[in-house]
Image (cartoon, one colour):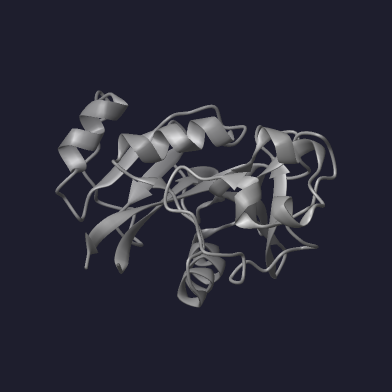
Length: 204
């Protein structure tokens, strides 16, 4: 079975080249041509905004969360609100897309992006075993990748600098992009200011 994934990107706007102080997150169908001359409706709730924009490709949907970054559980919920899940890196094209595309919209070169994958309870105590370093050592909200071949780890999938470091992230650090296992909240050196979601477009 081949599954095609539609990809969605959630970002905190203070990392964008343009800012609207009262609005701190946006979800787009693609990179907007311009942030200017848009219709603004600040009275909508998040759910109403999802409904209003669901079939509108030019639409930008905004939300105001805690600007300290996205926790793992929050990220799962945000993707779920759009009938999606956090994405994994299923092929080399996924790595190419997520390592390059978001960077063109970031003012800051240092941040994390949330990917799918949280270390299992059992493996949090033994992250360096062979099974725990494989995809079996993580729980995924969406389809699990076959392996970690498309993940460019800072070290490897056993990384656990602190006991809280159990969630997979993309690391944007200067000009370098890697994957790592970092905090599921916001206790890591950088904050997760991006969330990467995907859903199945069709299967055959």
